[in-house]
Each structure stands twice: as structure tokens, then as C-alpha cells.
Image 1 (tube, rainbow, N blue to C red):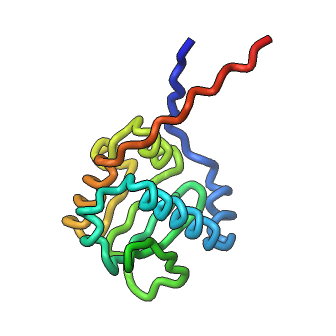
Image 2: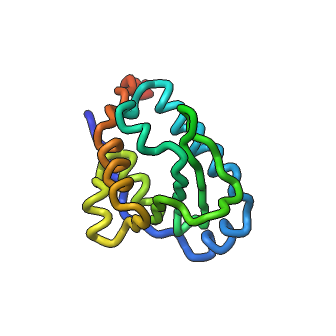
Image 3: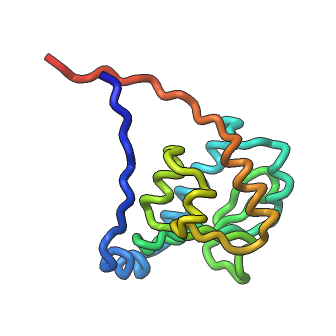
Length: 150
């Protein structure tokens, strides 16, 4: 029996975001940057587009968790930016469920954007480059885990 899991649309209670905003944001930033650099090393991101990201500042906000991560791409790697000194060149904001749906390829960025579930602000051309990069990612297949049955 092969069932696929569907990520439902949800919004965490407001108290989560109010607490999350008060917590240190560096763990989110380091985790995101590590994931992006792992994707680079695995050659999942189209190398032809990376030059357009050079020295650009990016921000990702998870609205219903209060989490925020800022980072840049420089010298072939993504780097955390803990105290941005300017507005980002490109910023994304959405609830956790929307980001999870994007990662699972359950929803595409255009649909989420037009349904007002994903906010994208900043350089429009850069936004299209990033969107096309994400669309081009070929996620590796994970091995099927056997069901535990007796």
C-alpha cells in the first residue's frame, strides 16, 4: 500500500510566533544555510544561475513560528547574516505549512503567491531567478523504508 502524505494548510497559534520572535534566530539561519550549502555540494542547484545570487541579501520569515533567517551567497557558498545592515534584495514570508508544501512540491510558488499564502518582496528579476532555480531542483529519491509489520 503506497500512500502519499499530504501536508495540510494550517496556521500555528499566535502565541507560538510571539514566543518564537523572542528566541535567538541564529539556529534557524545556520540550519537554512547548512541545507543550502548541502544542496550546492550535491549539485542540486543549477550552477548557471548562482552568479546572479552573488552578494545578494536574502531573508526568509516563517510568520506563524516567529522564525527569521537572513543569508547571502558569496564566493561559491551561502553565508549566514546575523545582523543585516540593509533591507534584503529578496525576501520570502509565509506560514510554516506553505514552506513545507513548497519543499514537498505539493504546491508551487506561483500558486501560493497568487493565493496570498507566500509573500515575495524585493528584486523581481532576482525572484524569478530563484523561483526557476527551485523549479529546476531534482530532489534525490529516498529509499523506501520497509513497514514494520509482524
